[in-house]
Image (cartoon, rainbow, N blue to C red; front, side, top):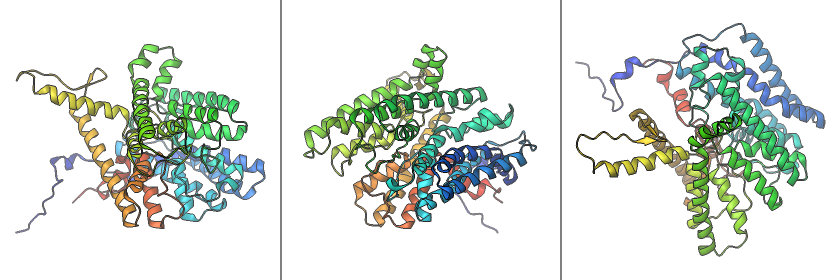
Length: 489
């Protein structure tokens, strides 16, 4: 008698599960090819103007290749039965391909291949962790490349194809329902995706204009704003924001705060729908989180710390950078004590859903707090009372709670694995934990654990974690699971 192996994860839904079709995924990626041109063309043109011919060549070549692929794929429409699994895998692969296409540019800038891959992944995932050792000596086109990659990774990659290239239909709706833009289905329709891209571009232009007024070098103001609006953290200076004026630092942080608010708020404001913008609750959540965290963090700094290297203003900007998951710094972050733990919690939760920020998201924290209050109140209800958990006035479904629980558990599990990898290489526990959370929340702040001297295997682990965190895990896990490609026998 044959004995069938038992599985803890076996369920009756296996027969209903679909698998990915490689041919469809390849075609869908080809439909995204113009994105790669958009990614490589501006920094390539900048390098051309600067006379850096080799850097221009390795950036313009992928742009030309992307154009050729798009022309070849135009006559082949996507199938009407494009599956949600295939849409998720496509977007995950688009981020990875974008990093691989820009990798040669970082090699030309003088980075070893593994470091170049790390830098490219950090850029496209809007993280801002860096292993570059002499970035200040780069031609300025290198800084444009990093800032532009982060700006594209913040929203453009996830919405541009839906907004500008695909016709209306089921494939567009499938791609629009992918939960890639940091946990909120903000590109659920083609019209909404266009509105979001318009708002994203308008916010960027407005903040570039304001930042130029307080940062004398307009080129630095440009790349800083590109990074800040996408809540990333690459800076053309080795000390991040430390050597800029207080006003310049504050203006960059303002861009980060705007980037941490749901972009739908600005869509409603642009349409004069102020009530709808307020009812989203995103601006209130970000403002409340900043206020509470700043009070607690600055109190810890003022009462406990004996280090007076930074002013309270600079400490406040570091906290804002962590909460918005931007990753800019005005000086070294604490290497021990309560202040570091508070900053770690800020990075853990991050900005709000529908923004370019990373982390677990403030809207999810709001649901978790509501669930705790609901659980306490539930014991006081009568036996037949039906009082569902609500978020922003709407009932929270059991499916949404399951997704929330799964996401939090997956996040914490991978944070633990990455932390253990740091510890296995002899890093101190608290700095290693801080940098692990910074990686998965796509923040970019570091206590020094992440750097050019990391072992190669750890650099690859951190790069993988940045990819996971930007895509919120599920898409990457689906891509890597064998059962996503073939049915179990």
